[in-house]
Amino acid sequence: MAVPVSGTELDLANIEKVRFGDTLKAYPVNRYVDPRDPNMLHEAHLVYRKETAASWNLSPHAPTTVPLGPVIAVSDPAEKPSPSNADIEQRMNAQTRLMAALTEQNETLVAEVARLNRELARTREVLGNAAKSNPPATTP
Image (cartoon, rainbow, N blue to C red):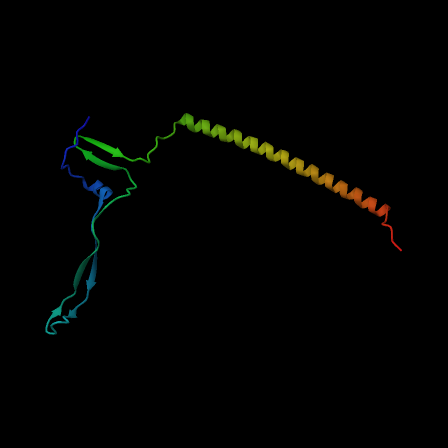
């Protein structure tokens, strides 16, 4: 088992994965007269302001490589092994079978709805003919 070596420095590519640095912004300032001394003129220059202080990266989104001396460990709990070609083919075949079954069920349901619509039309026709041949009785 590798023993971590204390004091190992992180390379620049991985430092942002562990700790964010200061965020600095530069603001241009035009020429102006010093408000405390009207005899002094300040020439145009840049003013640098620290917007955010350095902080630890508590939720890295990329795998973080941490130097542990002679061995480098990659820690990414979200990493999953890629499925094999056989596994992908098996899943595709299952999806194809499922789609075929759904298509068959859909065709069966469409045929049943068409049959019920024909039967409903025939029933309405029979009821319409019966109503025409037997008018309702009138009450005096």
